[in-house]
Image 1: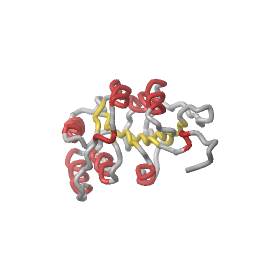
Image 2 (image 1 turned 90 degrees about the vertical axis):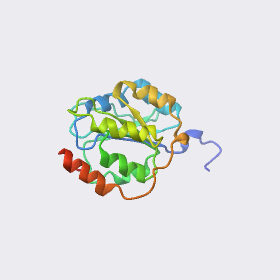
Image 3 (image 1 turned 60 degrees about the vertical axis):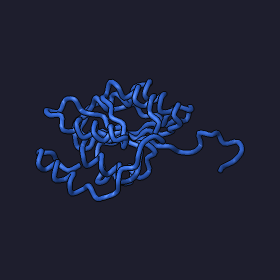
Image 4 (image 1 turned 180 degrees about the vertical axis):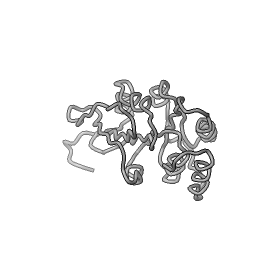
Length: 179
């Protein structure tokens, strides 16, 4: 378990945020607020890793040495699979590929709907899966409250199966890039 002198915060608990290939500065700004970062720390998370995509807003990096949440970010990665696997919590845009990949890994998930997109199919998918208790659904302005209210133990596992082909078909049909 570690030396007796180690604090209880020694266990690394990562929150991974992904916006996919989109521009979603509202989500990046929301997770970069002091309120959200303090709430994540209060919930026991130690690190925040943000995949910011094509956004222009750069979050504040922090090494976490002072007991605060360690924060790092990057724009793109050939694959986010390793980040998803190592995460204790995922906060994602509402792209179907990102949603189903996270659910297949059994990771607690908060989906944040991008209200700037032209249609609301992403909102419908996120809301339906939230109703079924597989994830939490939020908007940038409600993310802090969602984190505060969440109990990841109450989420139900998503039934196994390979949703990737369905997600790709939906994205192709709607004209969205694979993410």
